[in-house]
Image (tube, rainbow, N blue to C red):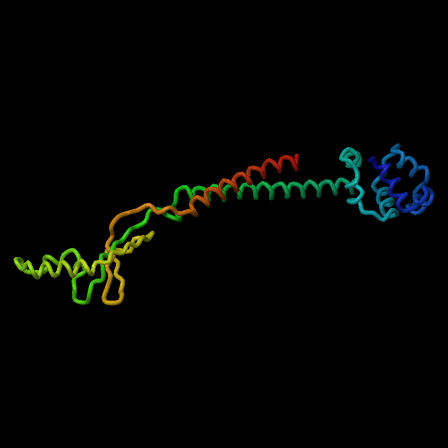
Length: 234
């Protein structure tokens, strides 16, 4: 819809005749007729008068016009100022869109790397083993070294001790992500448990897989942001 057609539509919406609008705007009817038939272009002052008479803002009028019609009015100071503001606003929106998409991609790569490298949630764990409860006064390694504490040749005593230590043996395994020394000491009923480092084991952490999945999803979303930005602002 051209400017003239838009002016005519707005006049009809106000239920005014050409003479009435011309009088209200303080312009000649013949000039208004030319404007409505797109045979003339308004001056900046005339456009202001028409907008006041029609009780409509410049922005509302221009937003109803096609880009070609707006460009024909670009020489008018008020229209030029509005176009400048629109360009600045669009530039700001475009910049924010690009920054958000870029930040999303950087965050996505960080998440994916964190999950892939397993740096935050390590899957290498320390396994500690305790053979049983060490009673007060016994050495920490009693379950392995008790034979050295008995006199040689005392087979009956050694056999009885072997039965006792076998009965006391109650193996426990623990796995932890950080090194806590060797051994780890824990007070329990009847004495103390000493957990000795046994080996390094792999312990799958589902969160690492989730970090990679989320990273891929956010990366795709960030790339789509660039595609949408081009369609919106080009």
